[in-house]
Amino acid sequence: MKILFVAAEGSPFAKIGGLGDVIGALPKSLVKKGNEVSVILPYYDSIDAKFGEEIEDLFYFFTNVGWRHEYVGIKHTVKDGVDFYFIDNNHYFYRGQVYGEFDDGERFAFFQLAALEAMEKIDFIPDILHVHDYHTAMIPFLLKEKYHWINAYQKIKTVFTIHNIEFQGQFAPSLLGEVFGVGEERYWDGTLRWRDCLNWMKAAILYADRVTTVSPSYAQEIQTPEFGKGLDQIMRMESGKLSGIVNGIDTELLDPRTDEHLLAHFSKDDLSGKAKNKAALQEQLGLPVRDDVALIGVVSRLTDQKGFNLVVNELNAMMQMDIQLVLLGTGYAEFENAFSWFAQAYPEKMSANIMFDLTLAQQIYAASDIFLMPSAFEPCGLSQMMAMRYGSLPLVHEVGGLRDTVIPYNEFDKTGTGFGFQEFSGYWLTRTLAKALDVYYNREKDWKKLQESAMTTDFSWDTASQAYEHLYRELV
Image 1: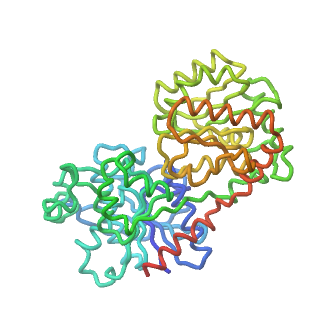
Image 2: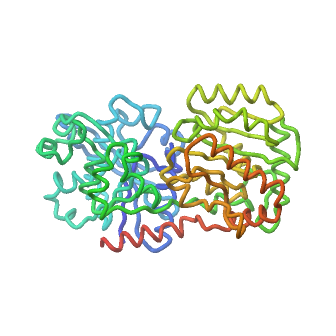
Image 3: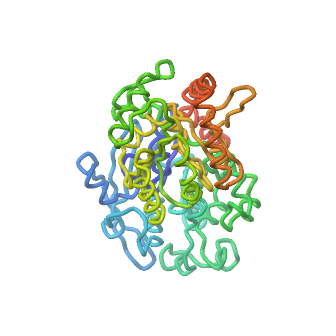
């Protein structure tokens, strides 16, 4: 099959979150299976600074963004067998950041128009056009309502993936004419209107041939008022074309046997290297070097979505337990300040690193015994899979992708890959931590069995991509 991905970010060129990981890994895996795969991304100034010398200029053309006649440069490189094309326009994409500009609606409208018009010009007309999140959500609509007259485009099937339903692309309806160059009929007849706004995500849900989310549980959850962020009614209406596919992780890169960030390598058959990493991290961060204490790791954005309101409320109780807590991340100021205060109050029990450092992140995965991830909602989540890969057992709120990837410990048959709580409350978080510590301190055989199960769970993209390939073949 010929498959084209269009997205606002993609690793290693531009990565802000999980979307970037998917665009970096899924196309590469699909190429291994014999598909012809291309990706179109915006050409940000950050990409030019880091990769400019290896990316070539192909050609340029102009497109109409409403009354504006805008330059579209096409750049290209090949990575891991995938053709990466970039839409170049300094005015829109040399901003110092990917998201968060006052004119994001116009910026990503331009990107979608340019990407659609580029397909013919780069001579890549896909069987499947796979778009992601609100930044590219108008593409299925535009393909059927604006570019339907192009014969070559008429057999293209579209797939839209929701990585996070919270960000929907809500704009004034005037954007249809002023930027996209189409009439407002589909707004006023209700098709594109939601809560008195032009809603890009709603457009994709209605116009795409298939809609996916990044875990089966999240696909069910977003059909409820609690998780649907106002679109649950539309999700229920279109549930027949909705499915959930769990993301994978790059198991070649994330491998405790070869990870270049680690002091010592290890495997499920020889965990002695994990103990060395633990001691090294304790010493590096000024914690007492103890092999007999449960080391809890946190690598995350510090936000309500990630459940840190629960953690902060329970920190005092946690600090009374025989644990060490190592945290890495940035986020809401009140959470940063709270963790910093507790780290100063309990210097022998806690290290708060309010920053992001990839090497330190990998060292925390490798050194920790328990990985704390109590998200309020989690479309998929990658950190819990990375932690399991490194023999750190996740403690999670059983929601979304966390429910689909972490099997809670069963004390009767000694099975599982981590620990989970169902009710989102500080009480159940602390009680579940106490349960995990009981297993760690008193049931060594059970702990080793859980570690082995976690480390041998297959989270590779080669497996995850099979479900996408099956979905594509159903459409073609």
